[in-house]
Length: 239
Image: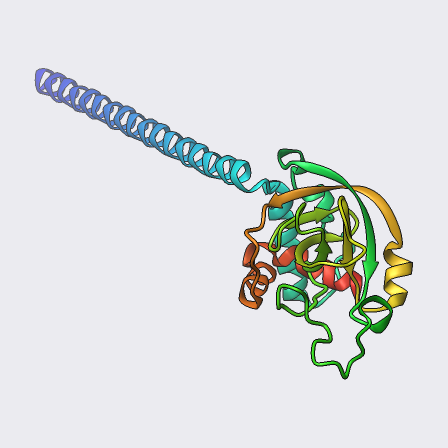
């Protein structure tokens, strides 16, 4: 009887030992699998982040856009559209949103003009009122029409003028000779109150080929990636 009990007891302990060993192996195996999964997920996440960073750096080097500022401005614009409320923190101005140092610059004397008689000698009844030398209509927008000496800045040249914005050379003028540009404004009051006459460094973003069409000017102003800046600009101009 005692012997049978001893055999039964040993068998029971052997079963427990076997069960414990199997349980530990399963736990260790599960932990190993989990660690491998975590390692793989971490590696994939790191590779994804590096890939996205590479794309952003390449985009910034090509376009000159400060990606961090662009993303911040787009998020602010989306938040404004969703809530219908004016954000207390305004997006950065164009002057601070781009790396302008990558573009050639030129010192010019910049003045302002309108489509009116005081600047062009034409009134609103004139058939060519508001029509530039290139054939496009004058425009004050994210990309505005400006006049220049066409031997210095050919038609279609895109300039960035700090304090004014982008200017596309679309016109010429009898008094605009050499390193001078004339910036379009809608009213005489805007010319005097917002600009006047300044000596300033402008950045040559793109050299023109002597031509400019309405569709090209419209495409510049409706570039989706630039709408956050356009909305900021329009908002400030219409106040």
